[in-house]
Length: 117
Image (cartoon, rainbow, N blue to C red; front, side, top):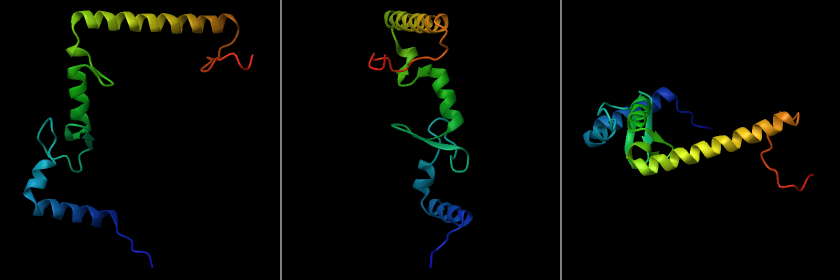
């Protein structure tokens, strides 16, 4: 016979365990706002710890982070190099798209190794 545990019971058990261990309860606070994360859209940020999803998103925007790149920490020279690379990539993509449209083909080829031509 299978043992079924309801979701509500699991939450109550987890809450009672956390209440029993004050250190555990404090460690479940948001890294950014220091408020409890349980039941309030919690996420785990690698290398940081528990956080509210909204707090983490706000932090990423304020620090201007894209992927793993912290843009605000770039020097002026590095920022200019990044800008040049982004502009080159946009130009290449734009040229490829215009070439496809002018050839009457609206599809974008993801893999063009010449084997199927």
